[in-house]
Image (cartoon, rainbow, N blue to C red; front, side, top):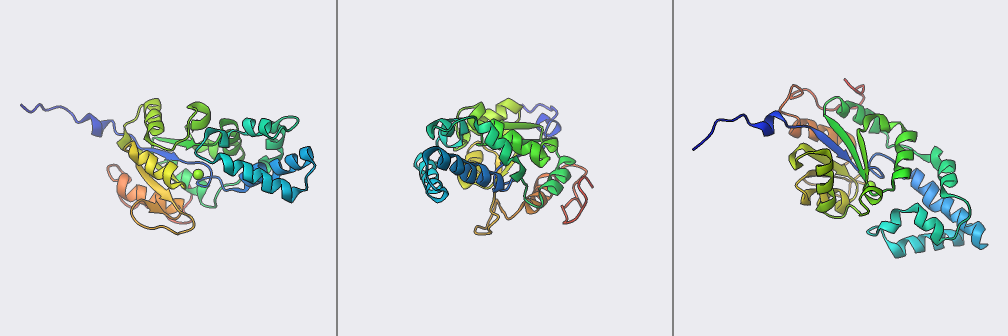
Length: 247
Ligand SMILES: [Mg+2]
């Protein structure tokens, strides 16, 4: 027997956009200044090497751990591992001026902010550094919630389980969330495994096909045309270059 009940999944459907942080919203200048240049300078001073030698050694040590392991993201771990004096926080403060976004980020985030219910950031980066990035870049104002999965869940977002935990934390179903990011595994395969519509951001333009976008303007256009069609933004809402944020 068929019951006539309101379709709550339509009534309650929210629009939630989830962004990766580094390489997606924030460019690599801060990471370069902190993780390579800054850490290598500290390492060179501590161990009596020249900067070039220190940079090679620091990079070799990072690579030996690899980005699928928790420690790779943990600056506290590296500070101890390299036996550096003082606090990494002083270095982070000295490098904070290098935080910057990709050119379209403020415009697109402002535009999307007006059209969705919630915007979250899901990063492998550790919480304290991610907070510096959000604050220094000014994009924190668009973001409802930051998930540092390495700090908050002690894991790396390499499979669907971490995205399922995030869905539970925000009380959302997979079809309410769209994720975008620049890592094929962390930002495309992993959220898809959790049933989340995901987009791979390829700023180099090396990939193509369904689910690949070249920048966040293209992402905003796809989101507007394919996913936001059920409301008043149904037509004419496509993101246009130069359109003031929030219009
Ligand atoms: Mg990234």
